[in-house]
Amino acid sequence: MRFIGGVIEKLQRHPKRVVFPEGTEPRVLQAARQFHSLRLGAPILLGERPRVKAAAERLNVSLEGIRIIHPPESDELDAFVQRFLLLRRSKGVQEPEARETMIKPNYFGAMMVAMHQADGLVSGTNEITGSVLRPLFQIIKVAPQTPTASSCMIMEVENSRFGEDGVLFMADCGVIPDPTVDQLADIAVATARLARHLLNVRPRVALLSYSTKGSATHPSIGRIQAATALAAQRARLKGLEAEFDGELQLDAALDVEIAQRKVPDSPVAGRANVLIYPDLNSGNIGSKLLRHVARAHAYGQILLGLDRPAADVSRGSNAHDILGVAAIVGVQAIDYHLLYPGAGTRLPGE
Image 1 (cartoon, rainbow, N blue to C red):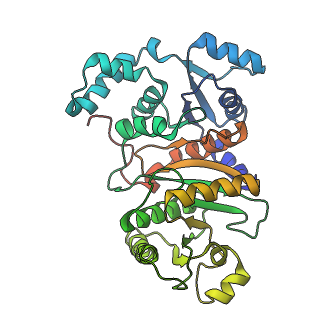
Image 2 (cartoon, rainbow, N blue to C red):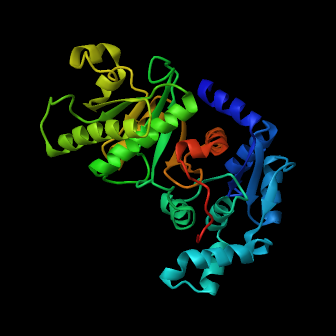
Image 3 (spheres, rainbow, N blue to C red):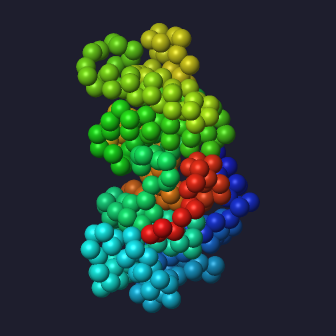
């Protein structure tokens, strides 16, 4: 709670509007209530008003200060349909299909963010990842000069000797199944940037493997080594002050005593606060293992590289997790251009 408490305090000084497409989901209703009660900004729920009200009544949750929008009845629907037609004209999309698509909550919510009618989006409590990502990639797209979109989990564990006072940034745990060297380097830099942005500390980035500094040989290890060097180079070019090291085993990345035995001269080993997984299998497994076995607070997936802030939460998230993710998305929106210069300056279809 130390980390998310600091995020909440910052957002209280700069409140934002966050849209939740799953407006009748009990966990989302509870998170939206807390979002407003904590003075973090204006939560926006998508859904039929009678159904949202009925769900809130069953939970004894007040809807005061919470905006409810039913996409088919929205005054903005026609404008959103026209914008979507501009975006998808090369795909041969016609108006009836565009209208049918835009009344879907995830599409409508993505367009709200793209059109600056909301500052960020949080979805995924009842949706598979593709249902959340597809509208975002079609409508919001990636930020300028950003070749790779990915995601990260922010984990807060009880033992403060790990990571940064118990906080670990882990990527990619949700988007790219088998990243190339280029993509791994981009993921490492983007995650380091987010860690710097939220924690205001120097990121110490470990690119993980089953090998530490050549303790095993395999082509996959060479990929990690190449990505480490490329990430360090790209971070320097972007003016990001961060340390990168790899390939490192997880114990060497996190445990000071083991790091002293395996890689005593590493600027990262034993002190990593950012962990970059070699592929989506290991990233997803590792993050869920930490969440369920170590009972870590898990905030994510925070999407990296998009033109606007958004998150795809796990279907296993509780109301506290969703609130934390919404707060992180809101804080990103305060000065998103620092993460992605030029982001948020264009409208869909431009």
